[in-house]
Image 1 (tube, one colour):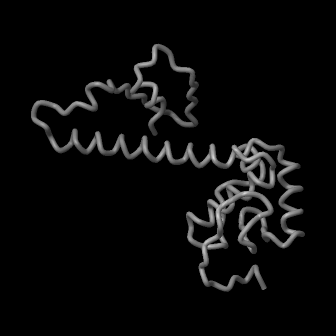
Image 2 (cartoon, rainbow, N blue to C red; image 1 turned 90 degrees about the vertical axis):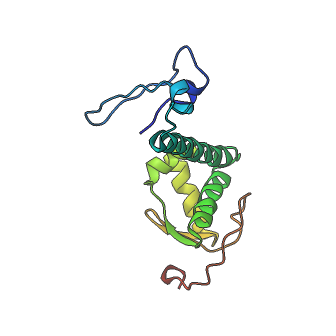
Length: 161
């Protein structure tokens, strides 16, 4: 995994990040200037390294942009709907699993777990969605807050019956 790559690109004097490894790890410090300029032989390996690092930076940028979009909503319901409708769009279906349990989802959305659970219950009672643990079925095109429209997957879901 890469970390602090953005700080390397701007040549920061200090890193305002902490990194903790959950397993034994080796750290490889890479000089950004030597990475982005090709070597004298212009080898394909160096080109591939540059392409891979740019792809990683772009992916992280997209993830952070999505998170900002989710967190910029004012209410817990709006944050939930922004996240869930985004997940539906990414998967191209109204029914999907998310990679978080309740506490992890609350942490991601920066809301209290009990408030998140309560709002999910209200959204279910309002007929907006159905869920069981990390499995969701979005029933309506809007969640009572702002959010992207749902994809039309044309599939009949067992959870909707």
